[in-house]
Length: 223
Length: 271
Image (cartoon, rainbow over all chains, first blue to last red; front, side, top):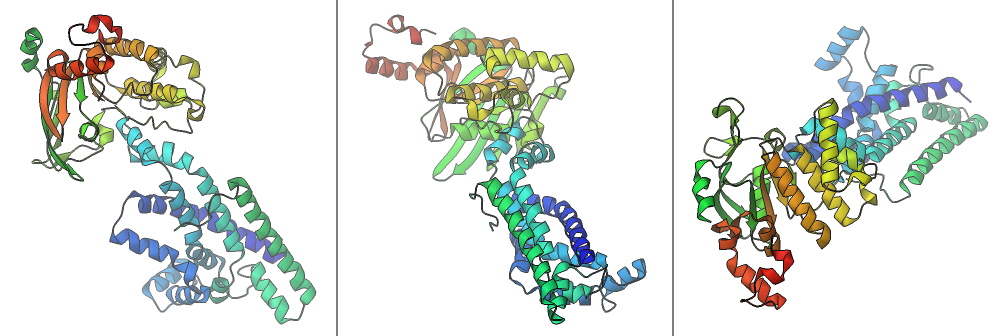
């Protein structure tokens, strides 16, 4: 069992979840607030990682964050090193890769809040921010938990993006799923078996918790 | 009748003029409120609720102008007048800045808040003043004993009273209060008492109340000014006795009371 990889995976999943919720909350609020071409485009882009091979995302990030592009050069100048093949780079990749898993449950949860409640709140003098904080957010709390759990689990399970963007640097970018791949390459099936079992058990238990809380009624992902 | 009309033109509290299309209904409405309590009367689908929603700021009329002013201007008359909507001046105040509470027809209580927290939502005073106003309102609507309950535990009538209390407590003194079918779903015994108490309470705070109903008896019991709406237009406005005479005669006929013998034998209508 590669405990260093285990800790790295958990650290990556936690950072990604925290960062992604900060991004997804306003983004989902904005998507729900109206309609139009811009919102359709943003929703399509947010949903892309669901259908795109992770290697495609990883490839573009590798190029975009490297010295070939202006933003990449800016990052290199600011940090002194490229984001690719570093833990921070992995966090950036994971945030993009797990975006739909955070945004879509939140959008579904916000949409399920009865608009009549928000109308009443407005006539009682509550502005959009107060209404969001006191009505929408508390009523969508189960969706918030779902978004956090799914993001965390999905990040733990990612492989393609990590492989393309992070490589296999112990302590920096070597996650459990990469470790498993390595162990199989080395014909170390006993170690691979233990790693796979940990990943399987973890994912199953988290999903079980989500469905248990929702009574199995609430869909995990609703476009 | 004449006495009331004489006082009326002096100071409209609210003036509304709007053109609006919803589905197949074309609304062309204009009226001014001069009395403390006015009833919008008309069949369902005649656009009554839409008028309330336009005043509150939940519907943007296609064109027109809505303005209201406080009965007792705090300092100068000008500072107490508000134009909340004016299509020609491209002015549209968002609902939350208007300070015009609307109790919708469906109670729409906040499900995650207790009765007390629902009622207090619109009241942003601090300390004793806040507590006093809220306790007073809770007892006015006979919901003091429900204060700690969640909306899901309430009956339909109880939820409706919480809905009314929540809007009433948020009404500014001298301000406007909009009630959509406020007494529907309440049992008859409670209804009469609540109606007269709310009427007195609104008068004591100098509120200007606009309520929607299609119930003739309710209009008579409130003894209010009536704006009669049909097919998106104002057909008549005036004291209830003159505007709804025909409706009342028909109702009494249906009840089997007959034309000659009027309200005296029907205590519910005697107001």
